Length: 194
Image (cartoon, rainbow, N blue to C red; front, side, top):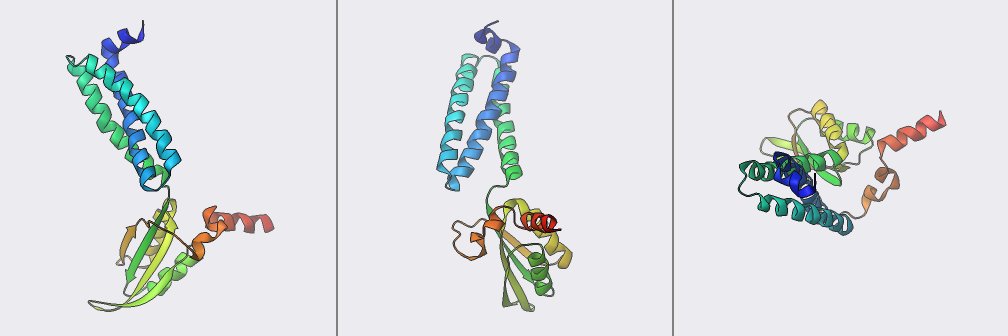
């Protein structure tokens, strides 16, 4: 059975569905890497995405009379978006700025974050209900769940925002140990000494 015969059969709709998942996932990741300035990765993903898209759309257009093929194309687009966003969250590439406003436990949160190997800067502030402590920390995105758990443990009522910084320069971010995993690297070094 040749390729045209496969695409003409009901299996063709499934193949188009799978091609669209690959195509749209690559496109989602391409946009994310392009926004973060990773031109090489974005260009490579764009190349793969364009190749797969041409093949998928070409075969979908050949079979526009088949509702199954049209549904395969549209369903693949939807599932590709879901898969692409899920991949991006799983990879968690980059860093995040975490800002915490706490009325009661700012120093405790800062100490717990530092004990976990995260840098944090504390500022005094004044909110609607009185004095607060404002904490800023820049962490790798893959460590974000751990950081949020630390904050919640110390002050479940803290106001927390998370943003993606556009530019990082200086500070403890230049520390090679941080780039290589921070707390994990320090833990490995202490285990090696023991």
